[in-house]
Length: 131
Image 1 (cartoon, rainbow, N blue to C red):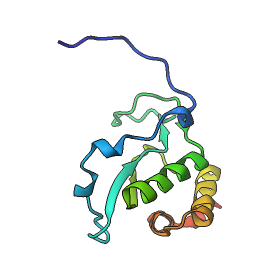
Image 2: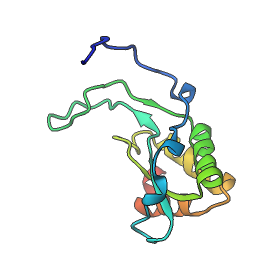
Image 3: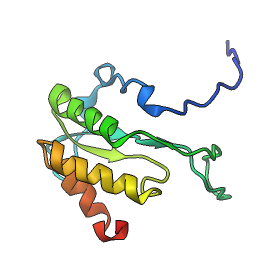
């Protein structure tokens, strides 16, 4: 039986949300397409999109992003608790806010003891687009 509880209010402060319960998933079945040896997972650093593209499934036009510090904390948890060295970011508009992307990349370079996250992300797009 399906119970419709109605629409819930948007969570504006995404840092308030807990990290995904990855221990409940068979995360050791997912390997990197890049190295083929390392565990990989997905991450979302934001929700919503301010655009209204006809082809897109995202209809929530209120964009909210987690803080770079919160994203770094989740990456550290991935590395320490699950030995996950790579993540695919599944945001609709990951590069929407240039300052946010630069802050995240700078934090990754400074704070992460596993450089793959930073190096892979840096290689996805030219860092100069942010300047």
